[in-house]
Image (cartoon, rainbow over all chains, first blue to last red; front, side, top):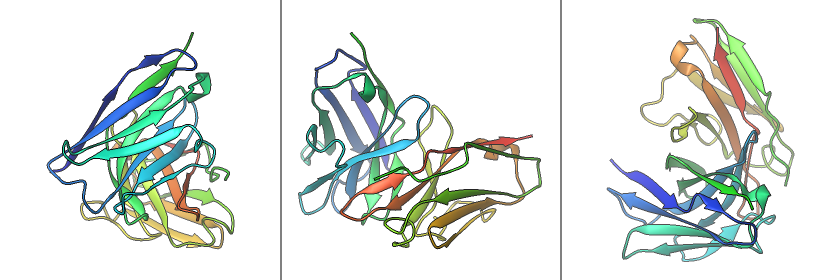
Amino acid sequence: QVQLQLWGAGLLKPSETLSLTCAVYGGSLSGYYWTWIRQAPGKGLEWIGESIPTGSTNYNPSLKSRVTISEDTSKNQFSLNLTSVTAADTAVYYCARGVKRRYFNLWGRGNLVSVSS
Amino acid sequence: QSALTQPASVSGSPGQSITISCTGTSNDVGNYNLVSWYQHDPGKAPKLLIYEVTKRPSGVSNRFSASKSANTASLTISGLQAEDEADYYCCSYAGGSTFVFGGGTKLTVL
C-alpha cells in the first residue's frame, strides 16, 4: 500500500524559506503528478503546484515567483521550497499524488507550518 | 483564479440524503469534466471520493454520488451515517495546468 509521509520545519520567521519533503513509500514516483496543497487556518484548500512526469513543473500563479517543487528519484521523494514566507503562508501543507492532472488519489497527512516573528 | 464556492456547512440526520454544491465559472467547473471531491477528517489525510465529475474510486461507498450542471457540481451523500461527518472539498482543473479548490463544507450528522 503506497503511503506518503512528509516532514519539514514547523516554525519559521518572516522572510525565511519553507522547505518540506514528501517521501513515497511502497510505490514509485514514476508516472504521477506530485503535488503540494495547503490549507490556511479557517480557509479552504489551495493548490500550490506540481512536478510532472516530463520533469517539468507547474505552479499556482499567485505563488509562482516564490515556489520550487523538485523530485529526487534516488530517494523516492519530492520537495517544496517556498521563499520569503510571511504570516499569510501559515498553513497545513499536504503532499499528494496526482493522476494525469485529473485528480489526487493519495494524500499525506499534512504538516503545520507557522510563520511568526 | 478564485476558489470554488461551497456552502460553509450542511447537516442531516442519519438515513437522510444531503447535497453539497460547488459553484465555479466557465473557466473551470463549466469548461472541464475534471471535478473531484474529497472527504477530510481534520488531522487525517484527505480522501478521494469522486473524480472526473461522477466516477467513484474502488472502495468508496455507492452512497456517494455526484453530478455537474453548467458551472455547478454537486456531491450527494445518501443514507447519511455518523461516520460521514467530515469536511468535504470540491476541486476542478482550471486550465493552464492549474487547479482550484472549493472553500470546503462541514457536514454535521445530527
